[in-house]
Length: 338
Image (tube, rainbow, N blue to C red; front, side, top):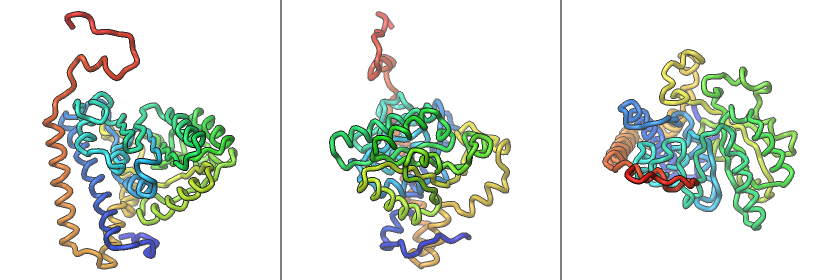
């Protein structure tokens, strides 16, 4: 089993345990979402974060939660949960229930919790990047020391609007971090087939933006890089672009059942040698921070918690038909009698 680097980063056994719990919770929550989709409990589309947990746990653990701003594309369950959104409301939204974060109307791709500093889930690839720039511009205009953390995928890094946005944030020195989650596939298209230059961190260089590539699998290394870069952006009030190398072990979406069309079992097996859960478990064993029995007990506890969340959400009602006219920009009115 591969071992995580940077043993000196561990502040305390309690923090290691919390990181372990947080990542396990995301893993089991996403596994339950996949099961719910296949049971017909989830409509629309579903994208899970299995294998990418340190990008939520590590990076969001280093911002000022509820103060800094976070915006993301549509693989977002882990972001909402890590920022502190009610997990029953998250699951309820995924299942289209009225008590969900977006009143059951947004589903998996459109979670939104402004009280927690989370500005969504956006379904249009790359379309949220100028919105992120707007959030950062507002904070700079008000002389506040907030930062905006904008997640996007490797496919979105090719969007024209992203380059326009980079030009603006570079020109205006906005306090924003663009976090490119490079899991090597834009849906089912390998990066070498969709990007003329596969070193995506270079996207920020022409605009004078601090740019670098970092690891996204070892949560300890992720936290060190995240804290360093976040502190830099907050202190300098200038942007950064970070390519985070990661890997998703599930399909692009829940309906992506034949991944052999774009990757081999051998490739996935090799990537699993750096499964974030396996890495932190290896660290725990190496340093005798927990017994195997305790790790198994934590795992069982979290599985039970996720089951309870699922059943609570499943017991909630769907929105009433008339609610389709609420919380939307329209002059349409329901016809009388409908």
